Every structure is written in C-alpha cells, then in structure tokens.
Length: 326
Ligand code: UFG
Image 1: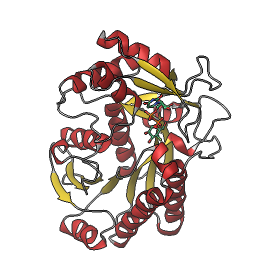
Image 2: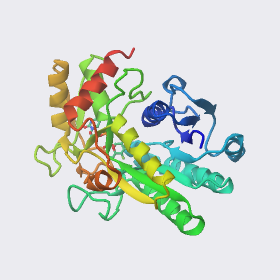
Image 3: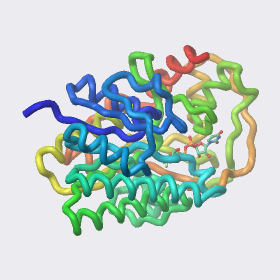
Image 4: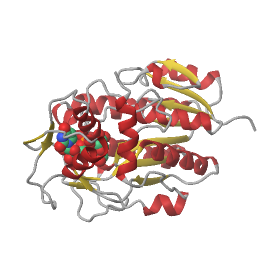
C-alpha cells in the first residue's frame, strides 16, 4: 500500500496547520485546502497546498479525482462564540453549509472517512462536570448549535451512505508547536491566552475579564485548556482507527481540569514575569460558566495520552511563540 493520503480542509488555520505538520512528520501524504480567509499560507509547512473554498464543488471534484484521498480532516470554520451570537447567519452558512458541501462532494467521489472538528460548545451549560460525551447537548450559542447540526448530518450520512466519521469535541485549544515555527495567529485575536500574553508584551493596555459573577469559586469562567499538538495527536489516533475499519464515534478532547480566567492570568504573570494589568467588564454573550471535559473515553478507546497535561507547559509554549511574533 502507498502512502495514506489525507485532505486537510482548513489546514492553514491555527489547529489545522499543527495537524498538517504532525501528519507530514508521521509520513502521510497531505493536501491542504484553505481559502485563507483566516489562515496563513506560511503556516502550511509541507504537502500540496490548494487555495480555494469548500463550497466549490468543481474544485472538490478535481482534488478528489487528482489522486485518491483516503480520509478528510475538516478544520475550516468560524470559531468565535461571541461573534456567532451577533452574526448567526454567517456562522450557519459557513460552518453548516460549508460542511454539507464538503461531505456531499466526498460521498459523490466515494470517500467515506471523515474527521470533524467539533467543540465543547455543543454541550451548553453543563449539568455535571466533568462533561462526558453522553451529556445532553443544549448549546448556548449559534456556533455550538451549528457544530451540533453537523454532527447530526454526518450521523445521518453514516446511516444512509456508510460515511465513517470521528467527531472530536475540542475544549479550549491553546499553545504552540515546540519548533516555534507555527502557533496561534489570528488577525483579530479574541482568545484568552494569546490576549493575556500580548498584554504581557505591552501590545495591549490590559486584559479584560468578561464577568466576575459566575457561579464558580472566583466568579470567572472555568475552561479546560488542551495543547494544540495534543489535539493533532488525537486526530492521528482517530485516523488510524478509521483506517482499521472502526465505526463512527464522538470523543471529547480536553485535560479534564478547569482553570478560571483569573487563574490563567495569574499563571501568565508567573511565566512572563510581567505585571499584566486587568480590568473587570461585563459578561460576554454566549459564554457558559464551566466547560471541563471528561476525556476518559478517548484515552481508553484510542489510547490518547496528552503530552502537555498541565497549563504551565501549554502557556510556556504559547509564550515562546508570542515573544517572536512581530
Ligand atoms: N475571556 C476573557 N477576556 C478576554 C477573552 C476571553 O475574560 O479578553 C474569557 C471568556 O469569557 C471565557 C474564557 O476567557 O470565559 C475563554 O475564552 P476564549 O475566547 O479563549 O475561548 P472560548 O471558551 O470562548 O471558546 C473556545 C473556542 C471555541 C470553543 C470553545 C470550547 O474559541 O471555538 O473554546 O470550550 F467552542
């Protein structure tokens, strides 16, 4: 058998680019499709790059007929919870319709292995913490609702057409590749850790804390931060499992430990040695108080073992990256 060929849709983005790098290092043949709306061409460190959109059926047909694709990993999505509340149409169009277009083209071309970037935002405010995959899904925002709708779509496509998928529900992706070559690079940054580190570098006057009256020990939201390279390693395991003929499945990806916004800021102060001014402001719409994964299932069934289990290592890797950004 030749090399396994993987199409990475959204491979120029933050998580996608780390995936491309891991796939290449693991010996896969990789094609990246990205419209570069939020991704960066320089972040794609190898393989074949195709500039285009996942709604372009002709382009997808061409990619799928140029060489046989064994599996598709789909990272391309708008991913800002707050934005999705303000602009649901754009989110449903890009995240749901876009995936529908991709899956339609895959099935037309006989490709039936799919790894989907889902999210902890499908759960909404949890009834139990840590959250297992069996927890009811009641998303608090259009972003989570759109991702959940895709999970339903691909499940129906499994029943009807035998699409085999792995839906990976990421908790809060953070950190940067150990090489320092790629990291989290958003033109408009909204995520907590990069914003705190940019504040440490003096590029922002202060970090805003969105809400201090949540029902959590210090009143700020708790999140489960997971290293981007560990997300990529989970995808490799999911891919092997699909290649071996496993059934479709859904897995949480997180470290099963929650850190509050204040704890994250304090840890960043320790690591950077900078004072990092803060300001308390109103809650941001669409934010659940707590999102912490029960990730026992992926550890048991796929043997996932994150390398960066504690937040200190995650922040250190992000700090190394941010210090070298212009
Ligand atoms: N926060 C602040 N100040 C900021 C930015 C964020 O207080 O300037 C808070 C948020 O309110 C939240 C926490 O920090 O409580 C984390 O916020 P992020 O924006 O970093 O991440 P989210 O939890 O909103 O969302 C991320 C991804 C989503 C994914 C979700 C799953 O962006 O795609 O994690 O947990 F769905």
